[in-house]
Amino acid sequence: MADVARVAGVSAQTVSRVLNSPATVPEATVSHVRAAIEQVGYVPNRLAGGLASGRSRLVAALVPAIASPVFLETLEALTQTLAAHGYQLMLGESGYDDADEIELLENLISRGPDGIVLTRVLASEPARQRLARCGIPVVESWDLTATPVDMLIGFSHEAVGARVAQAMRDRGVRRPALITGNDPRAQRRRQGYAEELVRLGRLPSTSLLPAAVVDAPAPMGSGRRALADLLRQHPDIDGVFCSTDLLALGALIEARERGIAVPEQLAVVGFGDHPIAADTSPSLTTVRIDGRRIGTQAAEWIVQRAAGQRVDDRVQDIGFELITRASA
Image (tube, rainbow, N blue to C red):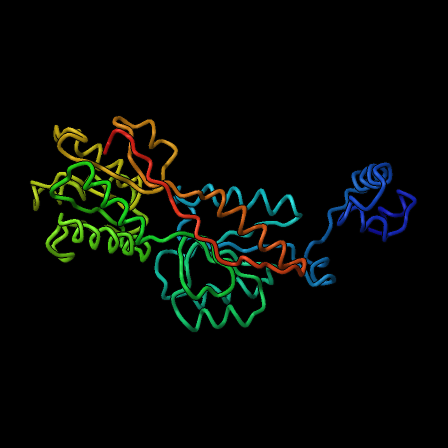
């Protein structure tokens, strides 16, 4: 920084202001200092700057699976909104097993982020207490709870399941079934789906719901195999709710291979509104979550709290939308 200041003929403090708050410096000075930075080849040491300022300009995010298309909109919006405020996103993969929450959180906290975004609600009380004590702003997302650690933006998975059950009833489905991942959020959608089917008179008991459970994250092929298994055991099923669009797309392929007409003989509903869901044949009925809104809001909350500002509306239920297409 001293070299840049010498070449530009300004103080080191002016160079610092250009790097950290350019809006407070005249445009001509900013251009002059940036030309000197280019000439010198200076790259700011963000770690040293973070130690000096007490702010790392890093925000950590955890997703169950980086390859999962469900969270891509959220991550994109999170990255873009944070970058606009001078923050970088540090991304980690948590898996679908909640048993290692403490270890995961310790790894995040040790890196000194200015905020943590989780695409889950913390399950274990020790993990919740550890995160609450660390003093780092936290946003839990893609779920709902009455007792968030700090801030929360999401929706009810049970309500999603219930809404799909109603859609099955409206479609005239008499023997509904389920293909689901074994992760906790998918299991709550299963619960809402089964309970609403019982209430609607489409199922005598939640325990009697024909279901195929696959390991999450599940590829499209798991959907094919799951539907094949369901049809062997329950050949009269006429509607299936899949916990992801990839599973639903696999089910559509398997139905076509077997000559089963969709939706006339089998209604298929997915979850997530994958980018190709509207372009399949038939197009896929699915549940749409506004992942971009989740990512944008989470980033804005983190930035506000890092700046010492108060966040009043700390819990938001953004709901969901059932997108009705040709498959159901």
